[in-house]
Length: 127
Image 1: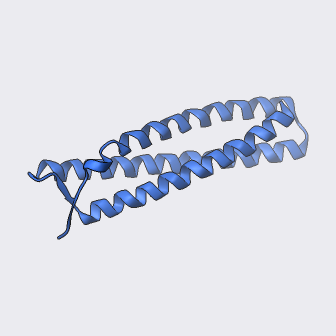
Image 2: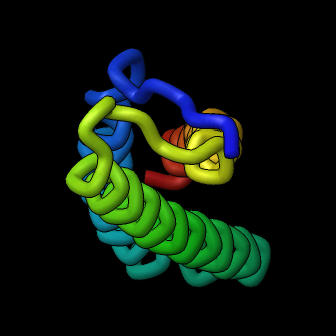
Image 3: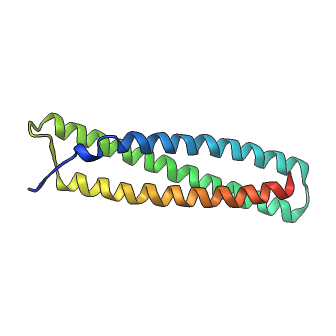
């Protein structure tokens, strides 16, 4: 079984979790702003957009929670293997999972930023 050194990505899990925590807090703030917009505007076209963004924020929140869970699981698995390995290596499967998490994190970050930017334009119009 091929073994991979993990010293070069020791801090990534923490950085990702910190960023995802920030995005979760930001979603809460965007939801509050969305509630304000809905309270001030009763036009059907605005309420459809409110519903659209509520759905988008729910999807993003769910994606963030799933990613956080998977990052934690990968971190626990890596730490467990490291505790049982004197050389400081993990098997290739965990490294492959880590690389997949990198891709998921980058994608989630990009999508979240796009949703936030679109929402901010909408909010600027109706606040």
